[in-house]
Image (cartoon, rainbow, N blue to C red):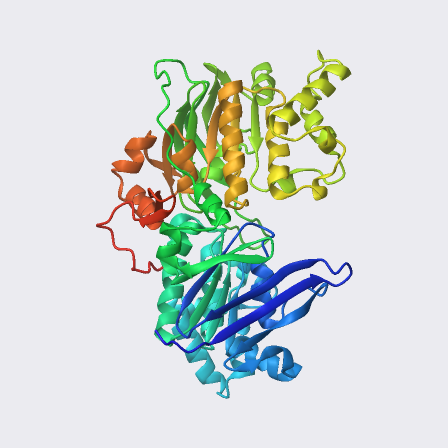
Length: 554
């Protein structure tokens, strides 16, 4: 690796223009050519703002009050706007967290990929097309010609992120800034995209500044780590050394918040299931038109499962495997085309007394609490709404029950009158859990309940969820693509692929002795972090005989 500096950030300070509140304080770091540097920290630590300021992409309300950013020896703050625009894309590229919002939904993929080349490279349209097709093949797009004439919404999240990576790497930048590039992707696609990114950058000698709260991924792919807290760098150094021997209390706190396998719970296997699904089939109808009729798609192919009292059953699988569809069908949010749902041993049928009883006893915690909480309602009203169909409870009893459950989830009386936008992501998720549990249901479906949270908040919510589950005794179907979370919280694991269950068993058996090749692939995609005697962690692959550097095409 070269020792000269490609990027040098010195004494960077960013503040909110209106209030002068500092959000990035005296940040200094460097990146060498070809080096991969990770920036980690909780939400609000300033890591994204510091990285975006390199390209002068900080929000209008934020202004730089001090410091310098030198790239290839040039002070970016002193460059004329035209020269700075020429640097963006051609020498400094950026991959954003959500490709659907960074790709133009109204433009064809081919036109979007051509745009950067036409602006920064002096080559004709035929050469640009050849370069684009070659790069699409490199990133694993099976039909590059067809992709050029498609729109972003016609691709999965993983494919969109590959296309975004292709658009950046077409210009062969010297520095790639990757802002949470795999947060919304499942384990296998996440591994593939990161392996691809590392392969392409090393091929072209590109340096990478990777912003992430996924410590296992940062541990696997970076040479150095920068740890940020409340706008400041608290620690930085060689990745393996820093993880094994963290010095700053905040770094130790981050590592301690990583999910860890808890001792196996002793649950009875002879009791009757609280919820049982038999041969469930879900089909989505194709679009209808005057001149054509598109075929429908079968999302679930006769799925059967059972959840016993007090049991936490984790449902895992890649994007499109059908796990969220199954959860929504069990919750009554989708109409199945076939099969049966049984609750407490009795069949559940719509428009019947059993259905009303089941729906009141089956509650759901959604992935994104901000979109599932009504922004016009106060926190107390949101939680109390779940008691609307309990006529035997007086108003005073409902108020007391809401107050009790808010305290149970760690929210005091001051939160009752607030609105969702006044809460942090972790606090909103606590409200979503409170709303699901206020009726004291027998069964809860949690669909990716911690995927949008950073490391320490995720740990708090998981501890809270486990404590509430132990105290209230509800059963849970826990849907997640985060295998570390599943390993911590699940009693049993069900693995889905292409709308079918391919393997199921108790947690320890699935994680330590998986039988199905897809389960092995899923578990081997993500490295694990093991605790060390010094209070740090070390990187460990779950199956050391599995290859980790192959890039799967899609």
